[in-house]
Every structure is written in structure tokens, then in C-alpha cells.
Length: 214
Image 1 (cartoon, rainbow, N blue to C red):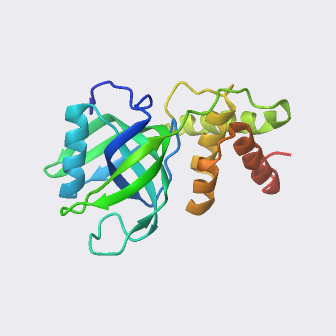
Image 2 (cartoon, rainbow, N blue to C red):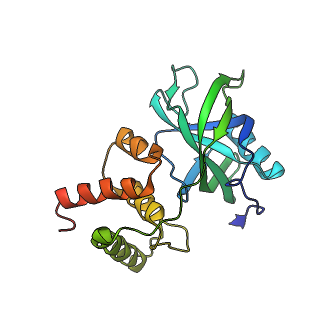
């Protein structure tokens, strides 16, 4: 698997014009790892263009419709996350395996669909989460994520990109949000929250309700 060229889509201009969008039945979080299997012509072109130009694309969660059925009516959330290509592998002719890193959140402005089915939109990028330590009372939730990471690594599973920032409330909250068994609508609501400590507190409440932490 070959690495994509290095760039920093997490630090774009405040306004990005004509950002290509990849609507998915998934919620990408800042700092998150997203793996895709790309085979549609419009998305193969998107990956090729982003790889060539060192530019990001936008991931938005679908509310209605499908990623692959072009004729179905499509509705997606008004806020998404920039995605940076970090690995691209030609699995076979016409199919790419792609790994992406989540960057900054953005708000959509007037998305438009092209003739080939690809969506484009001007987007306003939001500020990154402030880096704040997890509140002391949420220490068990931080420890539980650390234990989960160790358990997954023992099974040769690495769902999170290193370094693991367990001293950052937003990072901890985002990683929990990615693996919690909650609806896409709930994940979206958590992703759009501006306060990382509040996001982590809501995660903590969920885990306590399920008896994961006490």
C-alpha cells in the first residue's frame, strides 16, 4: 500500500469553493480514520484529483439515499468533515482502497450536483476543537478508552491513528463516538457540538448508563 503525498487539509482557508463531497452512511470525526473501497467513476475521479492536487474532499452523512445509486433522491447533513488521503492502494483494476484522516468540520453552502453525479459545495471551515484536558471526573471514561485500545491492539486491530491523545478531551470524545453503538443521527449531533468537554460528558453519561464505567 503506497502512502499518499503529505499535505495539511486540516488547515485550509476559511472558505473552500467547489469542495467535492462524498456522501456516506457514516459520520467522520476530526482526527478519525476512514477506510473506503472506491469503484464508482465519479469517486475514482475524485480520489485521483485529490491525490494529484493535494486537496481534501468533504465527507457528509447521508440522511436519505445511497452512496452508489445515482438516481435515488439524496439528502445529507449540512455539516461535514474534511478528509485527507493518507493511503491509496489499487486493489484491482477500477477499484481503490483508500484510507483518510478526518480534518476540520465545515458547514455547507449551496451544494450542487454535477452531470456525473458528483456533489460540489462551497464550505465554511470551522475552528478546530480547543485542546483541553479531560475533566478529572471523567477519568474512568478516558481509562476505559485506553483499555479498549490495548484490547484492540492485542487483536491486531488499530482503528485509531497514532499518536493517541488521551490527554485531549476532544480526541477522547471523538474516538468513543466512532465506536459507540449509537445511531448515525446521534453521532452527527455529537460531532457538531462545539464544546469538546461537553461531548465527552455526553459520552460518559452514555457509558455510565450502559454500565461500562461507574
